Length: 109
Length: 120
Image (cartoon, rainbow over all chains, first blue to last red; front, side, top):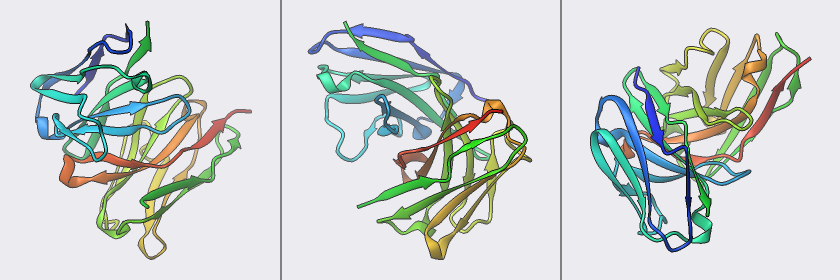
């Protein structure tokens, strides 16, 4: 069973700064099956990135994903006030099974 | 507009049963895998169950296998989750989510969620 570990648990930054969020898999995974989501309080999650680096429909280009093997990164190039939220990575495995990371909370400094 | 709308959440006693429903609109329901994902209060996301587009396969997280049953009615564009032998640890917001197979099986559309509380 693949475990996804996200770091840091909480990231405190100011609007305009660059955010780098990490997702580490317990074993090598296909980047084709790695996704990132944003969740704001009281709302459902929203798909940001699929296939490790492809932006979902309507997602601003300040959001980018990268990585391969066991290490994946979500980068927000220049934080806007609406970007402060919780971010989750997720992997699809065979069987099928779906695994989420524990989340990174991005808060305003 | 592509939409998912859950219903059926309630307060139920431990050992009780509940059936959640999810109404889909705006897309060809019978061509997509569908899932239930839950989120306990103040916690992260947990995948619960997935069903193939024609209902030919259903898959569960270990903690609910044998207690929960996912099903679908394609002519009614509806997804269901029958939950039996409910436990306190099943307390969560339950989201219905569409799976985008072409996008690496990501959850591309989510409902607003329905709250299930298991307590005496």
